[in-house]
Length: 88
Ligand SMILES: [Zn+2]
Image (cartoon, rainbow, N blue to C red):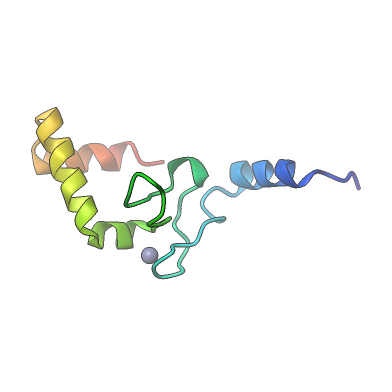
């Protein structure tokens, strides 16, 4: 067997098993996301990573959602339709 370096191993895991590597900092469930699109409630990445459930429970989520809708002139239904369609 060929030895692989740890960072390569992580890269393979991220590619082959996306979403299995991160646990929610609130409830310890898998976040269902990989590092690149992990959810943090703050800009400094101190609150998180969060699973979508915990993220949706946070006041920051509702604030971000309202700001996104206001910025893009979406209705709430359009916003959720779009985010569902773009999900992997
Ligand atoms: Zn959670």
